[in-house]
Image (cartoon, rainbow, N blue to C red; front, side):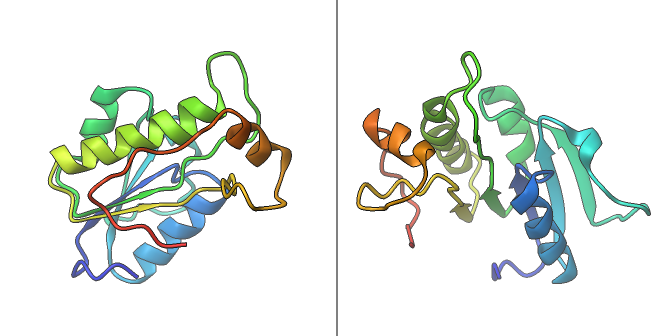
Amino acid sequence: MLSLRNGLICVLGGTGFLGRRIVRRLRDHGHTVRIASRHPQRTRSPITDERLQSIRTDIGDETSLAAALTGTQGVVNAVSLYVERGNTTFRSVHVEGAARVARQARRGGVERLIHVSGIGADPGSDSSPMRRSCVRRSCSVPTTPFSTRR
């Protein structure tokens, strides 16, 4: 768990399969969680919880992303894409979007950034066609001042 003394944590992709679980875990550990998603209406909470905030955010939009990160101590990027459609590509989400998140986190003074990737972008991996597609297109995230763990 983040050691941010129960501060405000933003979970990008917080209404998705993994994001919902991250939100629940952070909340259960006393954090206030800002659930950032293109689909905030998918936020599932049967009761009003003052520790849960919902905000419409698109990692392709600098303005909405900056608004989502304002005042947060930590950010978890759990945004993922499994099927490309039009301009929404693996590269636009997993590379350009992730870089945008890192830039906005740095600008906003966020203490911790955790990026979770569902694409298995290790070129040595036997993973999915999605990974092969991204690696084939030379998808890589520019280095950031944040640490990386595998």
